[in-house]
Structure formats: C-alpha cells, structure tokens
Length: 383
Ligand SMILES: Cc1ncc(COP(=O)(O)O)c(C=O)c1O
Image (cartoon, rainbow, N blue to C red; front, top):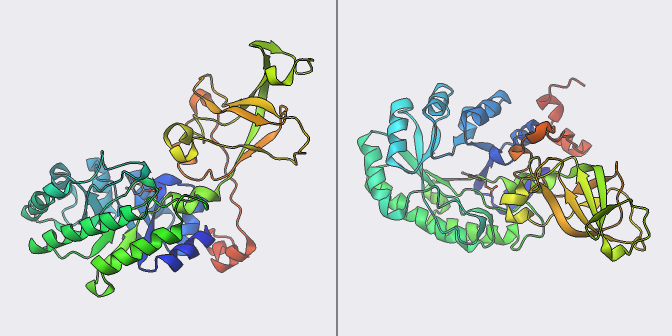
C-alpha cells in the first residue's frame, strides 16, 4: 500500500486521495492510510465512527453517500463531518433539517459505460436537472461547494474521466452563476488495484492531469480530491483457504480416490473454508474477479498430473462455487490454496452464512515501511 500511495502522489500530484473505506475497512488498512495522510470517503455512520475512532479528524472525511438516513446525517452534524454529497431535492431537505451548515458537493451522473461496475443508474443528478437542484439548495440557504462523480468501478478507459471532468466544469459554471463559491472537485474512484490491468494507472493519470489543467487549472484555486477504493487495497491481500473436504466423482459416481479409473473421467470436488458467502462474494458481482485462479501453497512439479477440479465454498448452497473446470494437481484435505488480489470488496462484503467464521486477517508490514511511517506510534507500541 505504501508503494501504491507513492505511485499515486507521483502521478496525480494535484489529487488528494480520500480512501473509500467500503472497499475494505480492516483497521490495519485504515491505520496505514491514515499514517500516509489520506482522507476517507465514508458511506455511513458506522464508517464515520470507525474513522474517527482511529484518530482521523472530521476535516479528512467526506460523507460521500447521496442517500443517507436522517440519523446518520445527524451523527455527521454532531461530529463535525461537514462535507457531504447529494443528488436530489429530497436529500437537500433532509440535510437542511439535520445539518444546515453542511458543505455540499453535488454528485452528477456521468458516462460509466466503460466500467466493470456501473453506478450512474442508481446515483447522480442528470446534467439537465442540475440547475434546478442548485437553485433549490440556494432557496434552502444551503452551501454548495463542489461537484463529485464516479466513472464506475474498474474503469477500463481514461477518457471517461476526461468527459466527466468536462461535465463537472459545466456544473461549476452553472453554480457560480447562481452565486455559489465552488472550490472542490471530487473525481471519485474507478482505478484498478491490479498491476496488469487493461489500461495502466499512469495512462489514466495522464488523461486526468491534462483534463484538470484544461478545465480546472491550478490558478482556479479548486481543490481536487478522489475516492479510490480498489486502487489501494486490491493487491494488498492474499487469501489463504484450507481444503476441508474432498470427493472424487467418476462418471457421476462417487469413488475412492485410489481407483484405477481413467484420469479424464474424474472430477475432483474440493471444499474449502471460504467461499461466495465469505471473502469471495466478489465472484458473483465483480467481473474483475469472475475467473479466480487459486494456486497451491507448495511447489508443484511440472510432471504432476492435473485433474479436472471443482472448488466449492463451505456452505450448503450450490451457488457457493469458487471455480469449475479448473485443472490442477491433486489436493488433499488440509492443503492450502492461495488467491492473490483479494483486498477489494472481499472481507468488507463477507457474511457468516451457515455460521462459518469470516476469514482472520494477519497484517504484514515491512520494517522499512513500519519505521518510515512511525507505525509504532499509530499502534501505541512503546519501543
Ligand atoms: C461513492 C463511491 N466512491 C468511491 C468508491 C470506490 O470505488 P473504486 O473501488 O472503484 O475505486 C465507490 C464504490 O462503490 C463509491 O460508491
């Protein structure tokens, strides 16, 4: 994560990251990012509570959800979390009731057609309705200070940012005409956390920097922030799953695994202690993770025979399948499988269905990073 942060500040020097903690709210992740000086994008009262409990100051939090329960807005008011998003008149009415001093960003719907997971169907004001909404905010004497958007998670083309930044400029101009002092642009998330993604972070950054310089040049005085989630955590987590059970099926009949059958007739069924209802729910909703490739936590000889295998999660449900038609060497109960890039929308989405425990998390930090960030201080460890 340290390296990824350095990559961020090198490539997007004008954009301050506010980590989207919905992506992975493990305390060690939040502590590390807090030490690196990022802000935090919170979506709920509990997320704000968690960030504040770790010592994050309210000015480093944006309450970025546009559809908020009244009680959560009240919590933000009490704890001085002032910057929050809206995209409808009803939200404005709620905010004027519970947090009239809030500093608002209007979230706009943008073209997210190039992203793996799209959001503009659910969130964001259409450009055609922005003028009316801003007028209503004025009537309610609310302060609108900026614009936010999200090009969709797992964005595959940097030009989506260019189009969205141009749209945001248009909204800034409308708001300024209506008398608002606009000073914050939030370019959302969408950046991949995997090294060899379709378009590289550096290529995205180039498009973003050029667009910012064109539409929001440094002398405009506009502060630029983003809400990256995956970018920071996707590659930081590796899942280790244990084989808890095994069945060998030959021609649809269960066999003992010492039979003399033809290898190609066999299907090995393995059951591991994590699955779709646990850390691997991303298989069902996240195209970035639809083809997982678990690998053995031991050296594998190239001469070892491969068997057609199905890997199942531990629960009673048959949708709880991790891979199918997967050709790997034979596994045994007790073996460990590893899956890389499991930090995004994994542990934060997991359940304990069937009362199987959620995965334990073991943070590992290099001595260099530990010392550079003075993490002993963050963890309250006296040396
Ligand atoms: C409002 C908002 N901001 C940021 C993010 C993080 O997106 P990503 O993980 O693609 O960077 C999300 C993801 O759901 C979101 O809804």
